[in-house]
Structure formats: structure tokens, C-alpha cells
Image: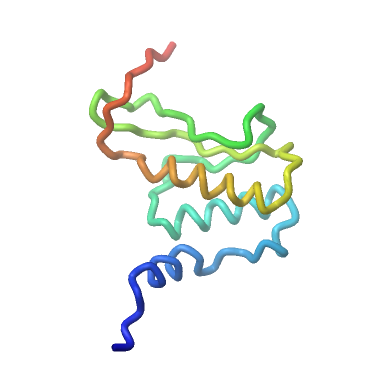
Length: 116
């Protein structure tokens, strides 16, 4: 039986076209990596800008104003432009934030925050 395991198919889908770690040298490179990763994961980012900017955290996905009691929406994906960690950790953060972003539009049981 020469069937490709399911996890290999998923790995191929997610990793196809992503830059090698050695190719990522700038904030623009990490932004392009994050955008390609999000696209490869099948996440619709048409209404979710990917940003690289100075923030106190390593990265975040900002909850959107469209959240309801039943569904979660994000309106921004951000990685820290001043992140001094190695590129390996910055890539790990891109994956981590993409995991959060994968919940966009899904049902949830979170709390609704009042927006001013």
C-alpha cells in the first residue's frame, strides 16, 4: 500500500511556497511569510490586514467589532516589527497567530466586549 499519509498531505499543503528560514531577513519577509501561511491554511484574509508594527507583544489577532455571542471575528493580524528574537521564534509566532486566526467566523462561547 503506497498511500500518502493524511498528515503528509496537510504538511505539503501548508508548507508549499513558504520561504525557507534562511530566506527571511526583514520585516517585509516575515509579513510575506505570514500572508502565504494564512493563505495556505485556507483562511480568508480579505477583511483582515496583516501588519508588522511596533507593539508590546510578539503578535496578536485583534477581535473584531462584528463578534456576536455565537461567532468570533478578527479584524487584524499583527506581528511585532521590533521583535529581537531569532527568526525561528518569529516564524513560530506567525504560526501561533495563524492558529488563532483560523477561528475567524467560527462559533465560540466567548464574552462580548463593548466597543467605544
